[in-house]
Image 1 (cartoon, rainbow, N blue to C red):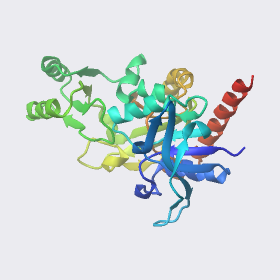
Image 2: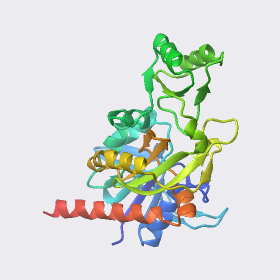
Image 3: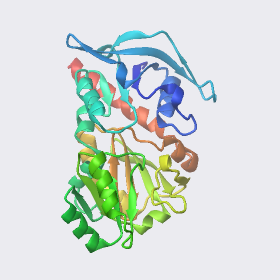
Length: 321
């Protein structure tokens, strides 16, 4: 089965081929004989009820400094391809949300991974609030009185933007820190949304686990270790990768959220777990494939493409009925 696959991503020239998950998905698709097209989110064109992209045929290879070739740009009708991978990096802003609305015009006849409507409806730090007993003590608000009361109750807290990514603007505020007022002023000026405040989990020093789920099933995990003097474990923030295994509690968390992921067509998901708590469900552009592959000796991208091909075949069979 040869598929036409369009990848909506930040420009391929900018990626790190030793760390990028989209690169691994592209490599695996190419190895399976699928044809690749590359385009950026700003290349989407909606006209006369059809969704197009100013796209280029793409080939990829694991050669630093020479990892891709792009063909001539064409106006590609996305309804004519089999699969679209929505893989541009957040932030999850109105540009991102607009892209999900546009991609709804072709899904599910063209399989979009992940389902664009469900991506829009499942922001990382909000989707997780719908699952009972998995979150650390959490407050979502802009109200200063409530924030101060939460801080008084817990002392040690984390303050972060509701739609942030990659560890940007994540602050660990200890009880004696005198910068809380200034921090809230900065957040109030920079963000229109509520903020998220959580009880600090000291277990993060042992690793913030990224677990990849494929169609709701755990495919691999890696512990992200924060550098000394930083409470953030994200790879983008300098966190180091360390081999780890799933605990019984983590398997229970995966089992609890799996039905919702499958029902919503969220094929490729990365969750973040600190200690016994689930902190985020990443559905926009999950990362961690290469780190997990190196440490666990697995091939997450193969499992993902098996799932994508199954979903495509199931949709084709239903349309043929």
